Length: 245
Image (cartoon, rainbow, N blue to C red; front, side, top):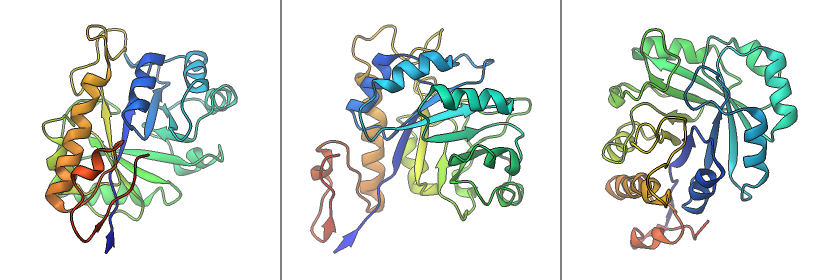
């Protein structure tokens, strides 16, 4: 029998408690809080702290920064329980390491050689987040790229950039990432002001397609995903399936 890994799911751009609760209830592994003030999904550290305080256990919290002053990052860490830091700007490895908190380094993919060279500069990163390259932007473009060109990294790969319920299955099958990083804006559930669901009364209605597509992708490549009790639908003889999380 073979014990097979599942692809984790990170949902970024959390600004409201209702969205955090909905994401947690449907099995999202990690929630991202964007502390880049120029982003429409910016959340103040004090607001993030209130949301994080009420989170269910075992949900990883990730703080996103772009070329932030070191003292701002430290102040945010003092105010919020952040399990991971995510750096999306022009930060150096020395800058990223100084906070003594595990971190992800986001890279904007142009070609395989350049991406490998950029990743080599961050051997201490807990993971490499790969996003689409667009001049003048530090990510969050909503654009995808050729997943067949994703190189092999020493660290876990977190795949981002233009992922939707329609294409995430293909992305997982092509790049085989450790995790996918999706946003409400990319799946059409984010509106002005950064909240995920100003129209639908139930945010889980829009989160579920991503999970369904994730399950379908794993069925195609012979892997198993656990989202509540959905795993049983994919278990086949000879496969070890995890129980509900």
